[in-house]
Length: 117
Image 1 (cartoon, helix red, strand yellow):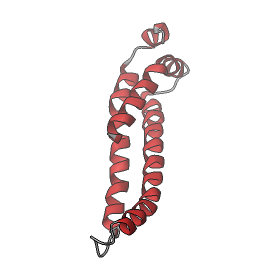
Image 2 (cartoon, rainbow, N blue to C red):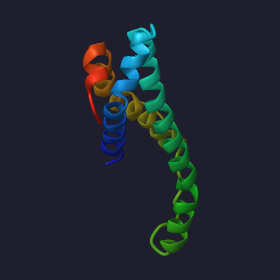
Image 3 (tube, rainbow, N blue to C red):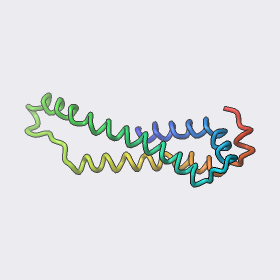
Image 4 (cartoon, helix red, strand yellow):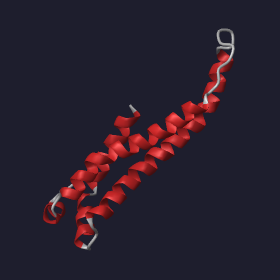
Protein backbone atom coordinates (compact mmCIF):
# COMPACT_ATOMS: atom_id res chain seq x y z
CA UNK A 1 0.00 0.00 0.00
CA UNK A 2 2.83 2.35 0.88
CA UNK A 3 4.47 1.64 -2.47
CA UNK A 4 1.29 2.52 -4.34
CA UNK A 5 0.83 5.74 -2.38
CA UNK A 6 4.40 6.84 -3.07
CA UNK A 7 4.19 5.85 -6.73
CA UNK A 8 0.94 7.80 -7.12
CA UNK A 9 2.49 10.81 -5.40
CA UNK A 10 5.52 10.73 -7.67
CA UNK A 11 3.44 10.32 -10.83
CA UNK A 12 1.18 13.24 -9.87
CA UNK A 13 4.19 15.38 -8.96
CA UNK A 14 5.93 14.63 -12.25
CA UNK A 15 2.74 15.33 -14.21
CA UNK A 16 2.31 18.70 -12.50
CA UNK A 17 5.93 19.63 -13.13
CA UNK A 18 6.20 18.74 -16.83
CA UNK A 19 6.36 22.44 -17.74
CA UNK A 20 9.07 23.01 -15.14
CA UNK A 21 11.11 20.11 -16.50
CA UNK A 22 10.72 21.53 -20.02
CA UNK A 23 11.97 24.91 -18.82
CA UNK A 24 14.94 23.23 -17.14
CA UNK A 25 15.72 21.43 -20.40
CA UNK A 26 15.48 24.76 -22.21
CA UNK A 27 17.96 26.28 -19.78
CA UNK A 28 20.44 23.51 -20.53
CA UNK A 29 19.79 20.89 -17.87
CA UNK A 30 20.50 17.44 -19.21
CA UNK A 31 18.41 14.32 -18.82
CA UNK A 32 20.88 13.22 -16.15
CA UNK A 33 20.06 16.30 -14.08
CA UNK A 34 16.33 15.63 -14.35
CA UNK A 35 16.83 12.01 -13.33
CA UNK A 36 18.81 13.10 -10.29
CA UNK A 37 16.08 15.58 -9.31
CA UNK A 38 13.24 13.09 -9.67
CA UNK A 39 15.03 10.16 -8.03
CA UNK A 40 16.31 12.44 -5.26
CA UNK A 41 12.82 13.65 -4.44
CA UNK A 42 11.40 10.14 -4.47
CA UNK A 43 14.20 8.75 -2.33
CA UNK A 44 13.96 11.59 0.18
CA UNK A 45 10.21 11.03 0.60
CA UNK A 46 10.67 7.26 0.92
CA UNK A 47 13.60 7.46 3.32
CA UNK A 48 11.86 10.03 5.51
CA UNK A 49 8.76 7.83 5.61
CA UNK A 50 10.93 4.80 6.41
CA UNK A 51 12.62 6.60 9.29
CA UNK A 52 9.29 7.72 10.74
CA UNK A 53 7.87 4.21 10.32
CA UNK A 54 10.87 2.56 11.99
CA UNK A 55 10.79 5.10 14.82
CA UNK A 56 7.09 4.44 15.43
CA UNK A 57 7.67 0.69 15.39
CA UNK A 58 9.24 0.68 18.84
CA UNK A 59 6.37 2.28 20.79
CA UNK A 60 3.80 0.32 18.78
CA UNK A 61 5.55 -2.98 19.55
CA UNK A 62 5.96 -2.06 23.20
CA UNK A 63 2.24 -1.38 23.48
CA UNK A 64 1.34 -4.53 21.57
CA UNK A 65 3.72 -6.60 23.71
CA UNK A 66 2.20 -5.20 26.90
CA UNK A 67 -1.34 -5.84 25.68
CA UNK A 68 -0.53 -9.40 24.61
CA UNK A 69 1.72 -10.31 27.55
CA UNK A 70 -0.64 -13.13 28.55
CA UNK A 71 -0.15 -14.82 25.18
CA UNK A 72 3.40 -13.85 24.24
CA UNK A 73 6.38 -14.27 26.51
CA UNK A 74 8.58 -11.99 24.50
CA UNK A 75 7.81 -9.52 21.73
CA UNK A 76 10.93 -7.84 20.36
CA UNK A 77 12.07 -6.32 17.10
CA UNK A 78 14.98 -8.12 15.49
CA UNK A 79 17.75 -5.97 13.96
CA UNK A 80 17.31 -7.74 10.63
CA UNK A 81 13.72 -6.51 10.54
CA UNK A 82 14.92 -2.92 10.83
CA UNK A 83 17.48 -3.48 8.07
CA UNK A 84 14.84 -5.02 5.80
CA UNK A 85 12.51 -2.07 6.46
CA UNK A 86 15.24 0.42 5.56
CA UNK A 87 16.19 -1.48 2.40
CA UNK A 88 12.55 -1.72 1.36
CA UNK A 89 12.09 2.03 1.88
CA UNK A 90 14.98 2.73 -0.50
CA UNK A 91 13.69 0.13 -2.97
CA UNK A 92 10.21 1.68 -2.97
CA UNK A 93 11.72 5.13 -3.52
CA UNK A 94 13.67 3.93 -6.55
CA UNK A 95 10.85 1.94 -8.13
CA UNK A 96 8.31 4.72 -7.60
CA UNK A 97 10.51 7.19 -9.50
CA UNK A 98 11.13 5.05 -12.59
CA UNK A 99 8.01 5.87 -14.62
CA UNK A 100 7.90 9.62 -13.83
CA UNK A 101 11.61 9.89 -14.62
CA UNK A 102 11.26 8.11 -17.95
CA UNK A 103 8.29 10.27 -18.92
CA UNK A 104 10.00 13.51 -17.91
CA UNK A 105 13.24 12.69 -19.68
CA UNK A 106 11.57 11.58 -22.92
CA UNK A 107 9.17 14.50 -23.31
CA UNK A 108 10.10 17.08 -25.94
CA UNK A 109 10.62 20.63 -24.74
CA UNK A 110 7.85 22.00 -26.98
CA UNK A 111 5.36 19.38 -25.80
CA UNK A 112 6.27 20.05 -22.19
CA UNK A 113 5.78 23.79 -22.52
CA UNK A 114 2.50 23.27 -24.37
CA UNK A 115 1.03 20.99 -21.69
CA UNK A 116 -1.55 22.48 -19.34
CA UNK A 117 -2.10 21.08 -15.84
